[in-house]
Amino acid sequence: MSLKHGLLGLLSYEPMTGYELDKEFSNSLGNFWQAKTSQIYRELDDMQKKGWLTSERVIQDDKPNKRVYSLTAEGKAKFMEWLASPEEDIKNAMQVKSAFLMRIFFAGDGKREDALNMLTMYREVCLRRIRAMEEAVAATEELKAQFPDTAVYWQLTAMHGEIMAKARLEWVEKAVEVLDRILTEKK
Image (tube, rainbow, N blue to C red; front, side):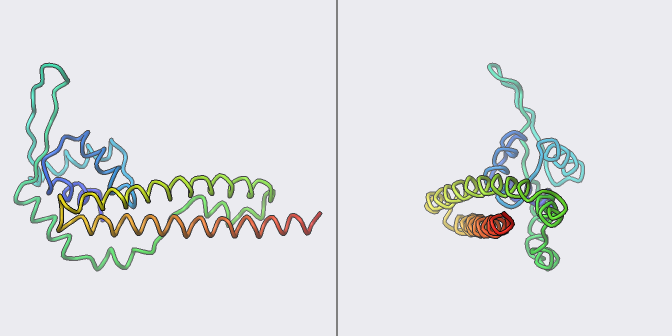
């Protein structure tokens, strides 16, 4: 998936401002794809130049003016073309790039206590992520009445995030157990 396709997908539901897209992206797609605000605005400009989006400047008296983006027929066609051709994304679905895991891989060259501290911090991140994913699953359940044809797919991705977070928590707890045992045996 590219950031463009995620934005096209969100705009296929309704026109939005860049701010709204940034917030919605983070709240929904942020479970499996991260984007910075500057990246989102850069992509919006690029897609508008390509004719995939239009934008309308809305003048507001009590607030700053805003730009509302809408999907064009060409943009919708590009999104549907991407949606119908998942082969490359499926091949890459298991790829992981984690500087954290690279640090763990090389942690044997450092102090075990430092590795334990890093794993303890990661455990807290996992617990927060699990709570967030449980909330996301519940939120998608509430959206089923409003979006019966699509909410189930949103729920599937939220479930993926929840299960992955629980698997990471299980891993980190086992990793801490292994290092604790090694530290205890050395004493």
